[in-house]
Length: 96
Image (cartoon, rainbow, N blue to C red; front, side, top):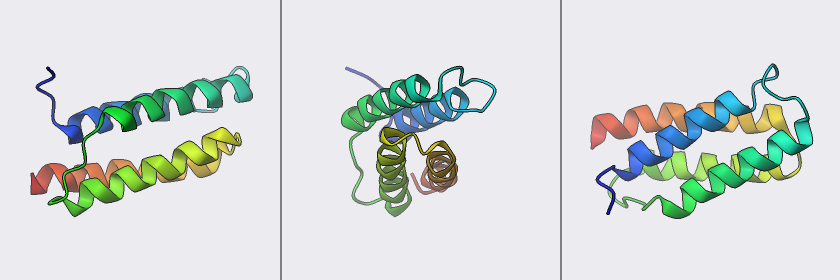
């Protein structure tokens, strides 16, 4: 049983994926986007939504949308959504 909060689990995944899809980190953009999508989807499946925390719900929505963009190798759009998710996660920590 994990003692990490849903916010912490998602935050770690978002940070890892953001690092993985940096232009300098992507050797093959298609392979990199697929790996990043899989990693983020795994984290989303394991994240439990806290219905009392609107910021966490918004972060989850941004991360899910980022997954869709990664599916189509739309890296810049995914990075924008992941950055928004990171901001919402910061708010979620304050409200937890």
